Amino acid sequence: MPHIPSALLLAGAVALISAPAASSTLRVPIETLALVPPAELSAAIDHSAHYLARACGSDGQFIYRVHLDPSVKQREKYNLLRHAGAIYALTQYHQYRADPEVRAAALRAAHFLRDCCVAPLANRPDLLAIWSDSRLTRTGKARQAKLGGTGLGLVALVRTEALEPGLVELKKLRALGRFLLYMQKADGSFYSKYIPSEGGRWDQWQSLYYPGEAALGLTLLYERDPHSDWIQGATRALLYLARSRRAERELPPDHWALLATASLFAVCRDACPPASAREELVQHAVRLVESFLGEQLVAVDPLLAGSFTRDGRTTPTATRLEGLLAALSLLPHNERTLRARVEAAIHAGVGFLLRAHVREGSSRGAMPRAIRALPSGNSLEAMMFNFRASEVRIDYVQHALSAMIHYRQLLSARSLPAAQVAP
View 1 (cartoon, rainbow, N blue to C red):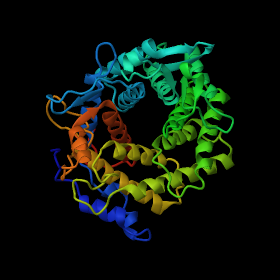
View 2: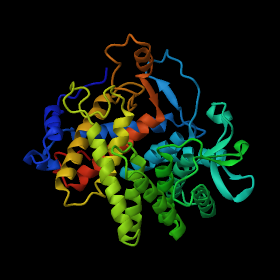
View 3: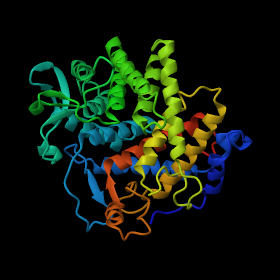
View 4: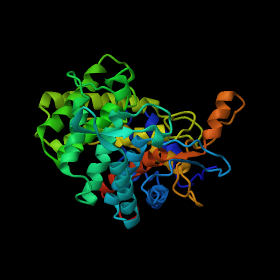
């Protein structure tokens, strides 16, 4: 059972999140909430980064999935999107705190990704994609290039190229960017996959996350190579998401769209997109944030307080926290009540993650699939859930690590007294 830190003021978090919009409680500054012990937060960040570094083998491939009970054997599978996401988190950590072990792991993983999986399309040698081959993924599926795989692969390679200039030639990064644009339709939406055996571009299935991952890849490529094609493609993608969701009452948990929008605004500053488009994207961000906030648990058992799911899974909370943290750079400053609700939700959510993460032993820094097994586990569904509750996958760790790093940076940006923020 994960440790429950006594210093967490859970009742305060619950009261703050659930207070009515007009309540003065919502205006309590973030500096005074002290919900997460700073030293504990810093230790969790360090341990999770080093967990991923240890999980990266000498060949650059990650130990993709383990179980906290070593007697449980896991099916061998691999996912290149999650491989790229783990690289992204490692580079975020190295930027937060330079660390030779973490840097070396990020570069090993990037070399593996570059050497194993970057290849051109058979009929378009000018386009490069990240290819998923069943010999690596062990899924039995046809060789294919996933939109999100190339999007996050581009994110990973751009960020590691900054650590090791020359890791990937600029012309190859551009060819990966051109593949993303090749997969984009006129309205800004995308084909989800490129499957040669199915005739090429394929959209019979849509991923919630691929468009945002592609947009993030394009914005980071623009930062490395400021060509208008990249930023225009990212803008079209995010505007399509905003416009296609106008009639939806409840928006999906698309944290990648928030990350990509925040990145777009950061690299563009005031140069792009146009004011009308910026307004649309901000309103989309506000609606996503409201949707996220409506999911968070408030009056629940203290172990689950701050979670975004009743079953205590950790990654849905981590990804929503990533989105909410990114959204703080997008929300209008005059939206004081909304911003305060977001900050309170972030505090409580990080507290939940800290209660779930592994603090000791050979798996220190791991993030299990769920904070606990379901209390009543007699049904087949519950038994299957409980079997996986102590599973650890690299993406569970990656999303939690990214969220905790951004949260730690938020606290630092607020200039907290030295006694409250650990170095």
